View 1 (cartoon, rainbow, N blue to C red):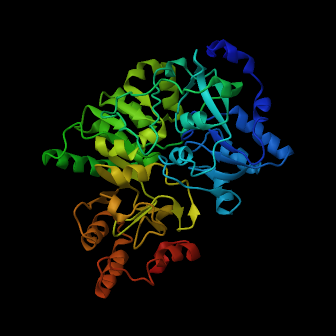
View 2 (cartoon, rainbow, N blue to C red):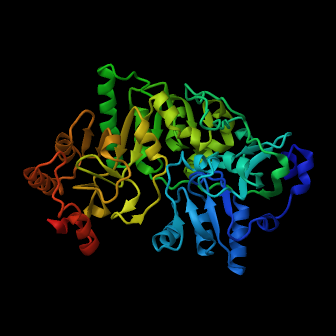
Length: 498
């Protein structure tokens, strides 16, 4: 029963329906909801709010940790509930409204949102809606499968609504580490020097008087839709494994490498999965999302410990892991995303960051967010937090997309999320380009030769040769830099440009 999970007895009379709880949210408010990459989102109140918006038109600004599961972004977008959304999303229906200009989307580095809230640089949170497994004797909120921005949302909000999910395992209690940085300009160093350090609390500390409603829920998290490794992703993993073996041989890394970070999705997950059949051992992770590969590596005896901000698993892996979560608890920690993604900690620990690119250009600039430079896909997420501050910043992508109609290596990216200064390695199934210590012209030769698909390599080399004749530190043919993108837009294939 939900009341058994509310250990502060005086809060038990706050149990209400989702509809009654949603009534605390008014038109024009800023709402902070739990949820990070389809994990740990509030599930009942958002649906009740969307139902109300269909009857009584209203708009809110919605902040979360990252994307939501259970089609919540879709439901709220189609109910025309959202006026502004930040800092990340991945839903096709919401994406359409954003690209049509109906919803104002603020794409942010995931470490920054609560910093802006804390310093009052953006509008404050009116109501926070947080999923929990329990409320402690002191009124502390124990999160479920994600922390994300939930802690700061709850601490700063005027009112807090708690959804107690009775189907989330109580074995999650003890895995969270809620550490909130002190205020600037006298902030103390964040006391994390190893991925398994736990300087914080096991719950979100809030004034119980701010908890205005408690809702019982039982809906599960959405599972991820990552695909199994294929020939291309396995090739990318092999290229990276050989590279790391070379780093070990050169004495720059040991067999435990450095703490690993991997972005969400099929390619990054498959690359990490490739470490199972590698010589590396005693691995650790300091990342955002703990995916299938994290638990695969733990089960294989390859990974000792993993720090993240959420747990997002495929259906099969979820069914294997969550009923047996107690066996993983001492090997995991879930933190607020401003800590999991904090530049200070990333730089201190020397993270190896592996993230996915939509496209990269011949000089190493990376686009991870916009299709043809204009239409948002998901958002920058935490990739920038890690890429700028990592010991090694790796971007992976298949060399072609849409059956070969798109080359992922282009003359110039149509949108820059990660500039050439923040990118150390680019890896496709074709090969790996180690860009460290190289000037732009040296980078271009390596990326064209090693990473570009054979169907596009001659045309890319011809573009570069012509650009070099015109001179410059970073040679370009300005009238041709987006010719490939325009060809795809107008004719359905980049090959029409040459």
